Length: 119
Figure 1 (cartoon, rainbow, N blue to C red):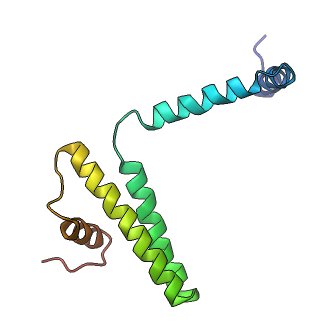
Figure 2 (tube, one colour):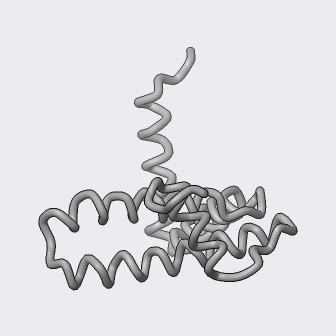
Figure 3 (cartoon, rainbow, N blue to C red):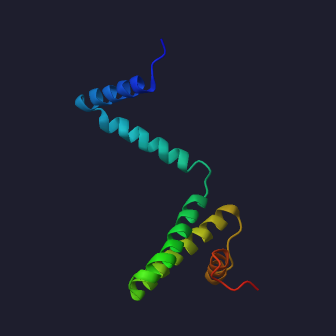
């Protein structure tokens, strides 16, 4: 007889509960976290992080600029752009295409986001 998904979940829950009671939960969680880190860093790039920063920056520009405090929004945007520029420069360094300078990297990011002037 094939176990249902529900039965498999119950078994995993019971196994985890036994591990917690025996003091092994920390080891199991540590193994799971290490596996996630290994998988996330397997390609050796920062593409996901750069994409996440771009999404957050666009959200701040779209939402906070309309509803938030302009000073706080400007500070948040500046911090996000700085983080984004650093990540883009690091990605380019990893790819062997290090940006000439911070201004070049910033210009590229702003153009890609539709906020810069393409020339």
